[in-house]
Image (cartoon, rainbow, N blue to C red):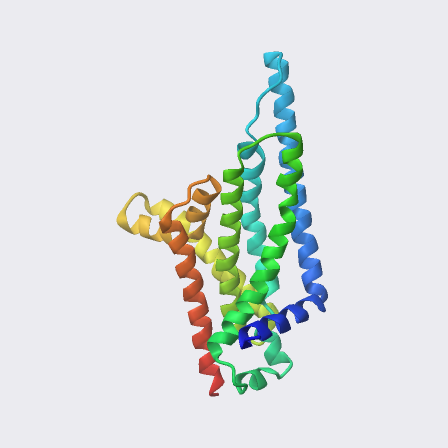
Amino acid sequence: MTAVHALIAKELRSYFVSPVVYVVSAVFLLIFGILSYLAVVNAGAQAVRLMQLQGAAAQLNLNDLVFRPTFYSMALVVLLVVPLLTMRLFAEERKLRTFELLMTSPIGVNEIVVAKFLSVYTVYLGLLGFTALVPVILSIFSSFDWNPVFTGYLALALLGALFLSTGVLASALTENQIVAAFLSFGLLLIVWLLGAFGSVIGDTPLGNTISYLSFIEHYDRLVRGLVEAKDLMYYASGVVLMLFLAHRVVESQRWK
């Protein structure tokens, strides 16, 4: 077992002995279930209205009526939930006075940062896996195109990776878990609002550049089923940048 694997196992054990991950998971899955239920109810109501007008069974697009609205709404849910998952990563190490022990161990800072990120990302992907029960159950009762569903989950996976890496950076900056959570939320909210700011500026080089920096534009295309290299590169480069900054922060504190 490599050092990274050992650290990931340690982090996962610490997650599942804490009530926080269970509470966050329950809230996350409950909200996803409620959003999906409301979307299905809305689709059913539209089917009834169309049936009354046309006098025959209506053909509805579940991708547009159920999955796409649910994925759009989940972006805000992930924004609120992710800081709660990442706030303890480095902040708790300082609170428990184990940060110095971790820094003096024969493990590189890059391995520590990557292991902490991968551990919380594993938890996040596990939550997404549970939500996949919704489209599986719906597929029993109705037919729909699975490709937009797959790209929607890809969008959530990439969005979560970007948010979690930002949370790792925020946790590395402070020893207070609450401050780390609010700092992570604030940074992500600012990046989200860049899209609106770019729209205000308009279709200009500056406006397009600012809009590109916001993750919501890239997320929107993926949810609509459009997988483009520039969107994948945006999320990949964003994760690498956040983890690099977290590495520099931890490295600078190693010698204090």
